[in-house]
Image (cartoon, rainbow, N blue to C red; front, side):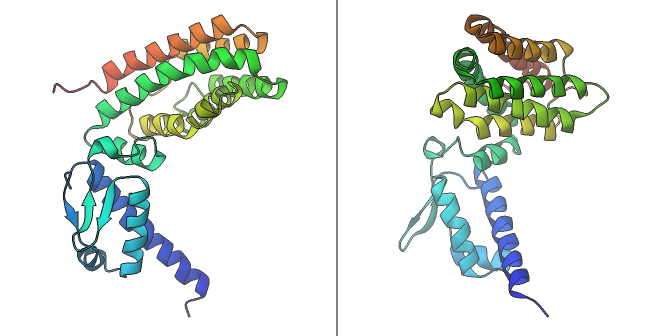
Length: 243
């Protein structure tokens, strides 16, 4: 006997399947700008109800990947209109063939934002945030050897979230999910060395020290070094293909 909870869970699973499949296809260019997706064809393809398809389409619309037009269908929008900061859009794009360019674009964004955020964090971080940052940095050190990338990732993501939150700038803080997707994507798609660069790990510890000591200039400078190093790693691990 199927319970109401099981039915809801199945529906959510189907919704996620349709959403992820369409999102991956759109961001990979399988459906170019102007392509029309018809809900009845999608429902038949996935063997799901039109309600499930409509729910998935609504989410895609919220990301500005598509727009619904009466008597036309669901039309794919241009990449210039996409909400490229949406974590799911980032995840889908990192899963596609354009991964090197996407990683570089996001890493350049981080290099513009995070050094400034670190400088602000040195001015505004609370004692609790300083303690959290130190704990994250020590966690990165502890997991930086022995192929512990999953553990290292947790501490790395947490470290950068604390920096952005401690900046005291709510716009920077909202980029926490973006940074998390970049770091997670690099790990999951193996755009990382087997063990993190020891120099980069040490720099994270030094950033934590600078923030704790209230040294904004040093915190910003070291964070910029981390960003430069991340771009250099991409040159080796995910070189940008020629246009």
